[in-house]
Image 1 (cartoon, rainbow, N blue to C red):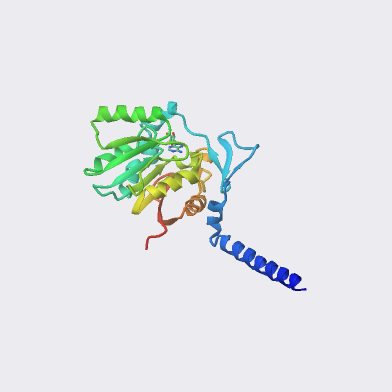
Image 2 (cartoon, rainbow, N blue to C red):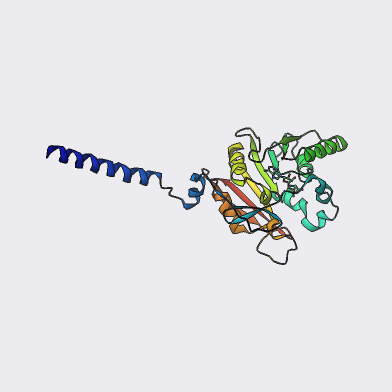
Length: 253
Ligand SMILES: C[S@@+](CC[C@H](N)C(=O)[O-])C[C@H]1O[C@@H](n2cnc3c(N)ncnc32)[C@H](O)[C@@H]1O
């Protein structure tokens, strides 16, 4: 009889421990539930020919634009179509800022930002060494010394911790194959009051003649930034076809 009572008592304690364990492991924020999962991506056989068939929070990731497209990034009509000078002035840069241009490509944005950073610099980050070679070439040609090319991997922007004031992504984020890992690397690289700025073609507008996977809606961008602990601060609607969204680390007041 004593034996049975002891067994029941042990089962009851085991049951309580199980409940406690489940309760402690349940994420409070549904967005953070994605982070705790080991597999945040979904591979689908049926997908767009512009994408890689891999989905992140319901969005199909676009194919990477190869380095042979660098000439298109530098097209003269881009100034009129995208008005990048407005992007640069909207960033409110300080002369000593360290700016990471993530997915820098040929450095189209990096070379517009670097002259404003008299005591700072641009880290021009890309996964394609050929793009970084183009940046090196332009550096020599334009006599610019405060741009440092950084070779990233698909999962890691290779930036030192707490080293950047701003991470800028122009027409790039939608093609990151591991967006969550890259963003986690960026969040670690931000200084305490650092900002993340994303410029993407407006996915809400069907009249913008850009392939669907190369556009993003504000709603989707916000979900994906929230998943890595970033807080939306503002959207600047000053560009003809893109939205410019500003995020900060959640810990800030
Ligand atoms: C469409 S281009 C845009 C280039 C540049 N931001 C501009 O506006 O001219 C996108 C760039 O992102 C780069 N890229 C793709 N995945 C990346 C990743 N995981 N980390 C860093 N760069 C990446 C590509 O190699 C490509 O050069």
